Amino acid sequence: MAETVIEVRGLRNQFGTHVVHDGLDLDVYRGEVLGVVGGSGTGKSVLLRTIAGLQAPAAGEVRMLGTDVYRAREAELQTLSERVGVMFQDGALFSSLSVVENVEVPLRAIPDLTAETREALARLKISLSGLPWNAGDKYPAELSGGMRKRAGLARALALDPEVVFLDEPTAGLDPIGAAAFDDLIRSLSRTMGLTVFLVTHDLDTLYATCDRIAVLAEKRVLVTGTIDSMLDVDHPWVQEYFRGPRARAARDAIAAHSARE
Ligand SMILES: Nc1ncnc2c1ncn2[C@@H]1O[C@H](COP(=O)(O)OP(=O)(O)OP(=O)(O)O)[C@@H](O)[C@H]1O
Image 1 (cartoon, rainbow, N blue to C red):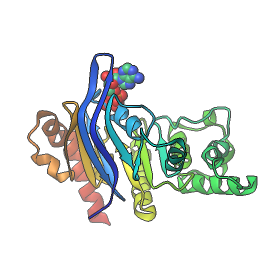
Image 2 (tube, rainbow, N blue to C red):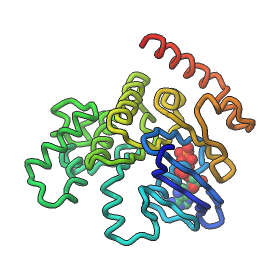
Image 3 (tube, helix red, strand yellow):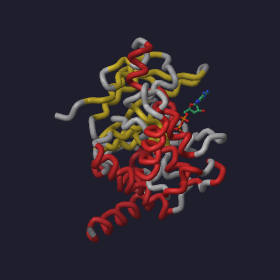
């Protein structure tokens, strides 16, 4: 049985009187790509931030790679942060730094790394993320939205993490750019054994990349399972989402893609 790398129990998140999550449980297994879906405002991004240690919950427990994210000591959290990468929607790059300098930021946590080695490692991650060789010397404002996302991914991968969080990685990309990003996520997960926690609305991405889906509804994880098993879930939002015309088109597209391979 696959190792559990993220364990969430009894999670509660609330802003004032607005309860976003209540009694939420979730397990994520090593090496899988988990797609987190749910209607707008169901708390997908809040869940990502809470698990990644960026936003303390009102109650509940989050364990990642064996560490209790909200009760561990500082040194343990530092070690954990080096095993985890986060890519935000717009890449969240520092605008005053070049791409290579952005990717170098997490590498600064490694003691005794020379400037040359740090730069070489950063450029390696930039090319792994599918950016052209000269993109490293550009500034975020000089890049397209898709390139900024790839640069954000390069930074998330800088420390060879075991777990990567991706928030809407294909939002705003044209269909060809989005499909290329899907392929990249899939191949990183396969070649590096990465565990991927992926928040998305993009059905094509779900079909192309995810081993398992977690549906957020009613303030908790309503159901988890393979994407095909979602067709049998008796819940109005799940039915509408996975049985709608967009899902059908995404299913047909992935079937045609598999037939070509
Ligand atoms: N810092 C905050 N302060 C107050 N309310 C917040 C905060 N962050 C999130 N919320 C609220 O929590 C709810 C969940 O937000 P979240 O961004 O996680 O939703 P989501 O499922 O990712 O939505 P979408 O699919 O539209 O991106 C929303 O109602 C949002 O307004």
